[in-house]
Image (cartoon, rainbow, N blue to C red):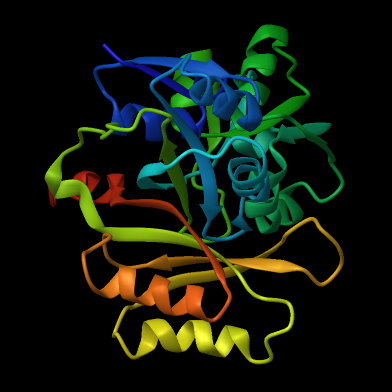
Length: 292
């Protein structure tokens, strides 16, 4: 049985992703993204599952920066999970009778439910928690009827809270993508083949400082080879203002010709190219929709 570290506590969306990817293995909740990555880097766990991108709020920068600057490990898989937020309470009152003085959740969850909060509870105090599940666990422990939390259904069931309002997120197509990383060279998750949505090679490209039009040349190296890019994002190198590298997702696994050729062309231009992972992408929604 493998050990899977994930951003805890239990009941987070990250645990849902870890459970989907590793249903039969031991899952270990950890308090922060860096601690989750650290433990896998030191081989205290076989895999780490951490959030990397939300469809509404964008990239989880702490994950990307920590993997690049602190504890680099190869990405061995990614999984997208549908995000459904609910308003949870320890009170037995129905929604119409609720008059909370405070709503607590993770900052991203609060941002993703902004319209709902403004419509129904515009004057309520908002408080941040380390995770949606941590907010639910705290409410279950204190049973404060003047507090509501925003979390998922699994957290409601796990901590014995009532769902006062379902699906309160502002956008119905909300998803979060999670990375699976490992320090073991032969690491490969075992998931249903029917859940696979694609293949990805993630590259980190640092441009030469004195090359005018370098980004155009980078994109051209992929374009003429008909390599489709699903994402391109800039991040600071942390070496001074104006210095950036680019994270690029190419929609195919590493091969023997096209991707090595593109990397060689970029290197000839003076770019530094690092392969962060070449892996399969999965989605729990394929299985939930009965397609798997």
